[in-house]
Length: 281
Image 1 (cartoon, rainbow, N blue to C red):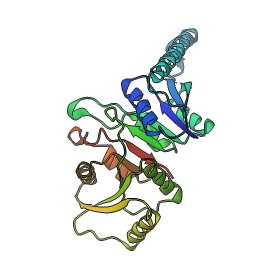
Image 2: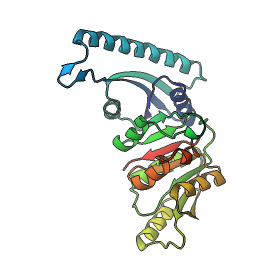
Image 3: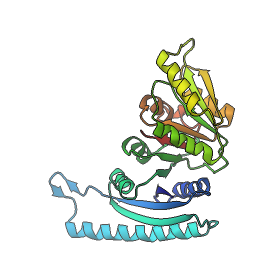
């Protein structure tokens, strides 16, 4: 039985994340926890409150009541989807800061995976992640499946795993990758983006050989692309291979941020329909 946490703000993209998770885990017994976080607002300025305490309490109660109503509506929408006896649903309504609320539920419910929907704008201003998703990846030590707003579940045939081979991956992380590849009988494509004429160090060679041995009984292959920009190399690989999912390790923040957090609008959007699985040690 898997315990999966899905934060929701009741938007279409968060509902899409729910649908994606249900389809992805269609053959897996799961407890799904639908979490809405009613944010704590800062009603104080300096040492004095902006509004009287009774007014704040009335506002808070009204907001919490509406959240409970919206959670019930979300459950009704899920009830309209094809039923799956392997899945159970629970609603959670926290009054807290977003990251603190998620951390608390991860610990209390022994969560195996967080599924988070993302929302972009239109045209070139599409972005992969909002601030909540970015904070969640870097500050909560739990695997996160990021589902872009336009992502529709299809059988995951190929999974890309970008790496520079400069980090030794613990067995726990590799077992999680293995679990996801076996779930859909997917092929793992391990890709390294390098500068021209770059040679592997002995450490990189050892790590590559270790990965090859670990996945020896699974469908996997190694790929090396030459590109000055890692993000462009990943883009080229994803598009040329019709990749269905990307797996990354949160600890490798330099590589991770260069792919996901783009510095200019023009460089954003190539993979907005491809889910990301982010793993922690």
